[in-house]
Amino acid sequence: MLAVGLMSGTSLDGVDAALVRIDGVDAATTVELVAFETYPLSEATRARILEACRPDGADARMLCSLNMELGHLYAQTVQAICQEAGVEPASLGFVACHGQTVWHEPDASRDYVDGARYHAGTFQLGEPAVIAYTCDVRVVSNFRAMDLVAGGQGAPLVPFSEVVLYGSASRNRALLNLGGIGNVTVLPRGRGAEGVFAFDTGPGNMMIDEACRRFFGVPYDEEGRIAAAGQVDGSALAELLANPYFAAEPPKSTGRELFGAGAVEAFLARHPQLAPADAVATLTELTAASVADACVRWVVPRLEGGLDELVVGGGGAHNADLVGRIARRLPGTRVCTQEELGYSSDAKEAVAFAILGNQTVAGRPANVPAATGAREPVVLGSITYPPRPQG
Image (cartoon, rainbow, N blue to C red; front, side, top):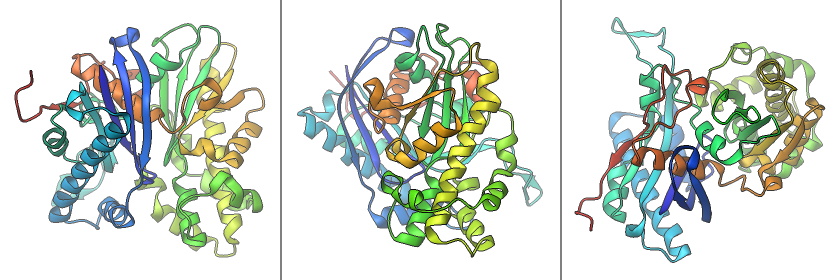
């Protein structure tokens, strides 16, 4: 059947839409990418999302409105990708919508308000009923909550799809996704889902992008040219790498709360001497160093024969300077991009959520407890049905 996977991540560069042909379930799943496009977010929408991500930034009315605004945006995205492919939205088997994360705090907070502790939670905006009504199709959403309730981090969720698409009989392979946050999925050779584990390595593009916006008025460092022209400040880098997150043992996940605009602002305030290109270079090296350190510290020791291949996807795969820095720090591992394996770096996560949505529709688990820390495999997501009877 045909389905659409939608992903809008922490980088806030747009909504990724993957139209796929998908059949089977579990290890027998087959998926073919029919069409893919990224639809940019308007600056006004992006600003509202950033405001909603601030602990003191959004009130209930704004969150309610933004939830509906993003629902309409996602519905329009489904219509646009279907029109591009000559497909009617109502003919889709389902739409899988990750939604826009505005808060992700998987560990119970030590903060108290009015004597009560904050609960661990995860919060994605983008009303699925708007998509279901507008496109006359069932919608799978709210993927992270069930894993979190089962004792997991609610992230990363892509490992199931990576086992399906990238598992190798002969090579120990790790899939590195460099979106706003970096996350890695490790696939031991010849073992299928057995032994798979995954975790967030730390910042991906998020801090780099923020520095580029502040200093150069551009949304990202195209091909890493700014970083390549700068010099890494060793002492500033060491300070950044002292963040306790990097030394924490997986499973673990993180987000804008730890590595967002506030962290960049604080970093620049502590290091006003840094030239703009040097700041971008230092933050780029931070991503490379944290990825490489995570591989050396947490990945290689768990693989017989070491890590053969690190496959880079996400927007960061287009940053040649960043990919090169990672490769130099992992001389014993082949570092390559999704494209070198015949896949799309940009479409990876949208396709992944289409695969997860397919599992939900079939009533099958799709989390990997070794990756998220959940107590058991669980069925992810909620299904919103179209408003009119089908068939």
